[in-house]
Image (cartoon, rainbow, N blue to C red; front, side, top):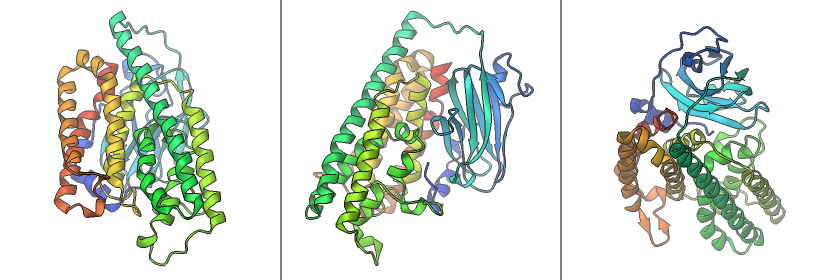
Length: 392
């Protein structure tokens, strides 16, 4: 949920393989019968969000989202409250079509297109109706599904718990005022636990802007709080003329970050996950790499982008590994390709390791950054097919 820079937009345009085109539905709006009623199209322009139907029967629903406008856009299926993200597809460049697939139970939802990737988006109510269609799942397949769900929930809960522990330690160091070296040393390590579950954290639309907003992404009137405000205060060298925060301001922003982290952790401990949420989360974490980490924008002040890069890849790999036994039954070729692409990307990341963690991003050459970008693009295309494959 971060604004795309010119470099990230260029990477998307240069990598058309990232676009996953689908088939347009021929069913009339509101038709609730047959598989085609679950195959919807979305035309996202600069000032409209045209969904081919306002309702669909419960089950595996696909949205083929085409950007007919001039700005990079994104599409969300939100819960009835308009805050919690059920499924999303981000960073859709002009004239690009990308697919979003999710298993959606009956209920009331909200669709939203975000041209320019800012604001609340162009919203409309969307209804998922009850369906009598029986989906037969073998006992063996159900066992794999349950295992994937349980393991991923445990992983997310553990990462959230570690995030809370490290954040408590970090804010105490930061508030002390005379332990900035220690706070700087802990910053990237603490952030790792956020980045591994970033798509889950972002699903809480009220918390993510408070905790992870970058200064360049602030909208008019939006108050800046969270990790990156503190990052700038700890690494002011790149800020030019910068007035350091007072001790009272430090305490205020640190306490606010900790309070929001505690709220996040409380919510996460209650979550359960479906296999499509796991697969879509894996894809979403790679999108975070492509649009923030590989461009060097995420950690603008500290230059610790590679720590975040690795953490996003960690989370994506855990998600993939969880559904891999299921995928191997349904599409073994895709499973093999994804495993290979993950290995190739990890090899490039390992080459940037140091005793302290990773090289700082401004130390990388243009060729090294391009190699990382190419590897991300090579992984992103097959990963975009993961959700549809495990739900087939």
